[in-house]
Image: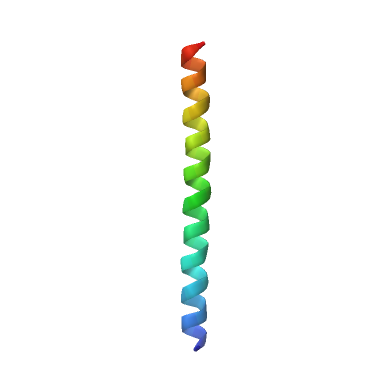
Length: 39
């Protein structure tokens, strides 16, 4: 694999992990907000 390919793969993995963490945190925020709305 060339250096460009290695960097490209790392960028894709980094974006995926960031997208996953953002989705988890937004889901947690929605859960907290809906729980607060019920109370």
